[in-house]
Amino acid sequence: MRSDSACSDSTCFPPQPLSPPPVDSSPLPMNLQVVYCNHQTADLSVRERLAFSSPEKLARAYEQLRGRFPASESVILSTCNRVEVYMAQEDGDGAPTQHQLAQFFSEFHQIPLDEFLGDLLEDTGPQAVRHLFDVACSLDSMVLGETQIVSQVKEAYDGAMRNQANGPLTNTLFQRALTVSGRVRTETKLSEGKISIASVAVGAFAKGIFDRFDDKTVLILGAGEMATETLRYLQGEGVRQVLVCNRSLERAERLAAEFAGIARPWSELDDCLALADVIVSTTGADRPVVDVPRFRAVRRRTGSKPVFILDLGAPRDFDPQVEKIDSDIYLFDIDNLEKTCETNRKSRAGEIERARQIVDEETARFLQDVYHKATGPIIKRLREHWHEISRQELDQLFKKLGPLEPGARDAIERSVERIVNKLLHPPLETLRHEAKEGTPHGLLDAIRRLFRLND
Image (cartoon, rainbow, N blue to C red; front, side, top):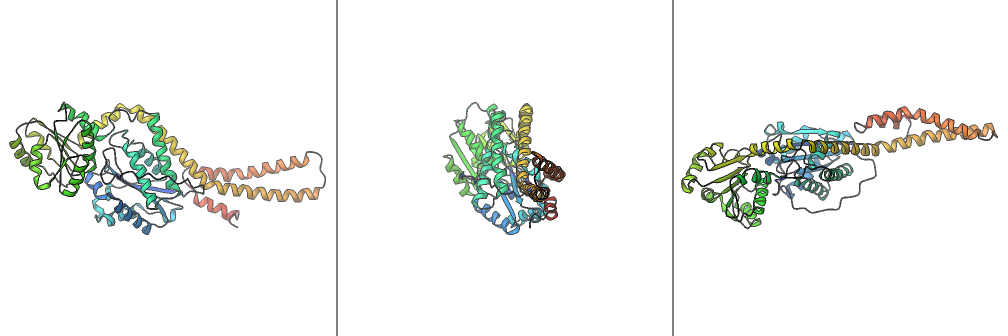
């Protein structure tokens, strides 16, 4: 399950760079799956409830995953717009089902299955690889081309390493995802222009209302990551006066301290609303926290001064009818942002196509590399086995034949080698063909048993 550029709260931990381990040269596990939900499949309230919102929660999650699925590697990517769990195994025997992973989410977060099961998707094998590459390249982000997601992918990988949950396949997979992201950034123009939810919201909406922001008071409702990122962008536009109002005063104080703002208790929400020129709201409440009567009372105190409201809640924090109280209220929500982002996406269709070509190329290359690591040793042993048998038979033949005409020995050896290679060709071609869709565990096992390669 996943995130986009507007993320920077506790679900996106401060970077703690780790040196990636060298890619293991031994055969890689071939069973790979990802179970996820994102801004396209689940609303924000679901994503927030399923998120692993602190390092402590992540550590507990990895511990529980190890207990439930001891044969699996795992990497968790948890941000405001997505939560994703990647699992990999040496064979399919220890692979969890989608329902088992959903049960893990349910029990870990204490949420009934029926409240989110329909929001979970699963990709396996090549589709799981392509999915991660799309995520790292921000091809399925709300804001196309945003750059924060690649840092979040790296932090997810680092978090798995810190918790000793990763392994050979996830090491290779996530390292390659970062490489693919770099290719897309350098070989396409996806990252040009407005590439964050904050930049789209402020650039497309707020700047149409206010010419300047250095004399405006910004109110943050809640302390979510999208609101935080928007506040960071607004400060870049000159905002100096910041209020943070949250049900948890402690969280409000932490966020206010980051931006030299003032934290206010939730009981003072109405006073804060009256003071604000710009309101950014993402509380995660299950119903609007500001309805028409409440905001109408606020407007009686303020008069009809212009106010810009960016409602990033899902469900909405502001009743949509609030905008109709008077003509100086400008209310925008996630739906407005998605429409603007979709327009932005359509305008860069050519760059998207080029990026997808890169992702397809890199997916095929990754799978080829990984499957070769899995099938290469058995192919090598089979060749060595058959050529050793032919060498033994030739040695016996040459002893019986005695001296031969010049060149005859070489001709016989080349002829036998050609026969062996022709006999090997069908099984090896079948093995390579089957490996294109994943490791052919059954076929590999059959070859080992038929030719006693384990003896």
